Length: 312
Image (tube, rainbow, N blue to C red):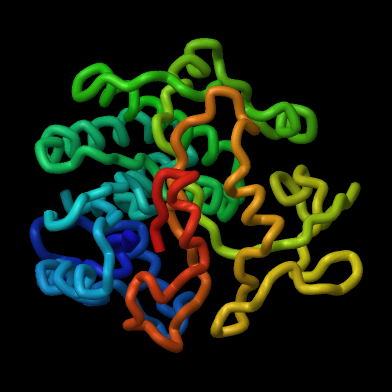
């Protein structure tokens, strides 16, 4: 079992070690009313200072590896490190200079940052993830398609650099938008060039972050514009007969994994030349017993053998 923690939520030490201001620093300090309780990441869990103690606690809880994220604006080992390069903690200076992920200028800056990480930590880190939950990051922006495109280009450029200068990997994905997206969102997306498609065919490991179950139904004219409307679907926690699609979690705030979802998550051969897949996260709430061991949280346990791994 493995543990997943994003840097801003746990590190703290916001002004130590030469760290510059991130977009999260700017948002939480300048507009505290947007965050419940007006909290921020200045101290957080203080993992910057307590990481050795925290890693010991993870081992005591039954975890055998740890997926953590490097803070881009900060540019820390124990267990097996799985490092995420970008967990949404963008340097605020890039946001102010050219709009961050809204500009393709971000690609060169992201590659420069990634190469520095590969060079400095590559002797200890053998497992890298480029971007945490790119879909979630993109759909929260007013121009989801532009952000999604630039995230993909950041990913492909970083992997190309890693393959060329740091490690040889085998191309395993198609490198293009799915047909349904080309059909329903053609007017909102910029197609990839042939060269960009080639550069995208290099994902070695795919991580699927699983949060909840939904019943999905076709809706010809859903509310909203852009990405929400292009999907032409509506989401519900109950099926067409009003039955819950899964059991609620301990806080009854989300719906835990349902049996149909389990079959879908473990289905083989649905994508040609499918890359290795890690079930990289499950966020059903277990706040009633926060110190329970990893084995006590069984939402997706049992899928490691078919997917390559599982992070709680």
